[in-house]
Image 1: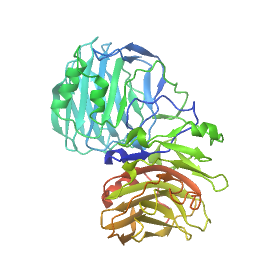
Image 2: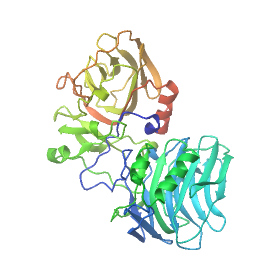
Image 3: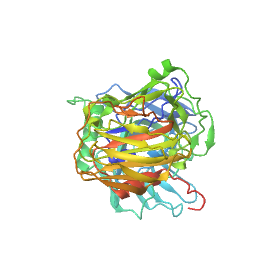
Image 4: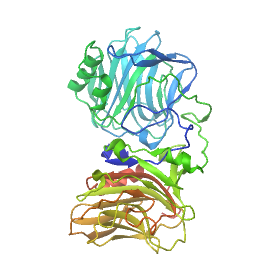
Length: 484
């Protein structure tokens, strides 16, 4: 959900001890762990004619790849799903899927259904029946086929080998994936295995036009293109891009439920040497330039928000006054924002601290988000502008969603999706050469350290609307507290 609003910086802070992560997809977008189960063969010849990059094949019985569910997989419209598939057997199967396939289904799925075509379906949570089901295209075995499934929020289209094979057809509503894994080679609930190979899987947060679809197919089948296929894909700013060229994938050991693998919580890292070697990865548009560094005794791998939208493996970074630490997100000028902006984060403050503590900020001359001595959040943009002050006491040891917005004239503060404070901000922020810091702020490094945990921090160079903030909050699927 966060990535669909195009942040310049997004630090999920879900890093874990080195050696514990699964393989990552090769993209500037959000990185999601990929596991395998059953009989797969990696390193088989890939789909792209002018590229030596390899693909992965499935046995049509037990083999598949899986990405455990997390809120990042709940794609809302518009979106496009792209991939190359090579069927080897005569039976139908699911080539890729991202949904919940119980009695009230959500999400999307693409089937190989010879001789009728490839089948793209959407679901709306009302019943097992699809809210959209369109089918077409060549299903010849033993050759690679390029597929693009597109949904613009109203109509769905399916392209096969660069041409429109089905649609546009109106969908009877759509409900994003609620809690299903993303799978390749089978459906999210591990039925309808695919006998064949897969390569170059891509998610986009927009509806790609026919001209782009055709260009991707033509590039992939061109023996002498001017640029690489991967660079073409990345030029479209995908959300996620799996090349599937790994020589090995980590094995799926056990299932906690039918749709994603169990993940045992990893212990907090206690070695500062390990922490320094592991960046806090940025998945926003500024890319690696604003990757964070875990400094001193910042504690990544700590328990994160437990709401259902965060999936089975939710992590955060913990900060403790007794072992000072923070995350250095660099002095990059792309975060020295003097115009409209939005900052969001999930925070869990230690009760009873009773002092001013900054959980995210650059400086008082720029912008910062803090909890004051009474346990209330304050958001400021510019030293000469007053703070927007919240109402809720968030120093209660539970997770809260913060959003601070500056629209050029007013500062607004949201807590758990609700507007809690505003302040007129008539003076443009002067900006600052200080570092952007998570866990304190750049000009009061040791004076305002935060005690608690932080996760899913994002910065935007525009003022998100109240509806945008509420959508991001609701995507976490927080269970309301008793009496609310």
